[in-house]
Image (cartoon, rainbow, N blue to C red; front, side, top):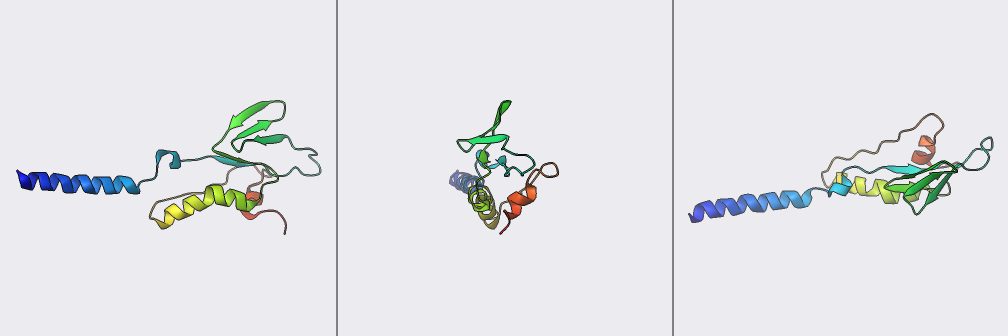
Amino acid sequence: MSLLRAAASKVTAKQRAAKALQPDAQDAMQVAVRVRPATKAEGSAAFLVEGGDVVEIVGRRRMGFDHAFGSASMTRDLYDAVVAPITAAAFDGFNGTIFAYGQTGSGKTHTMLGGAA
């Protein structure tokens, strides 16, 4: 009986160790948005960021995200909040993806590379 109990405790210990290495459910997928600066042709900004997680399309609607960065944000701000944890997890053996999505001119390159130096 003690051999069975010892084998069960080893499996349980392995399972606990494996679970400790898994990221939390909140880390499974996050959506971040960065509002690019308005161009001269666009005039004033049409988007407002409130509280770091809500974007308002001025006069139309509000949307919630895990992270929201305003047009004055720096690429480093986005990196520290979103990219660095994914990179650190990748070095710990977890898979991670950073996916920039949006229509042409929406600010993907601006977000990945930053503004003009």
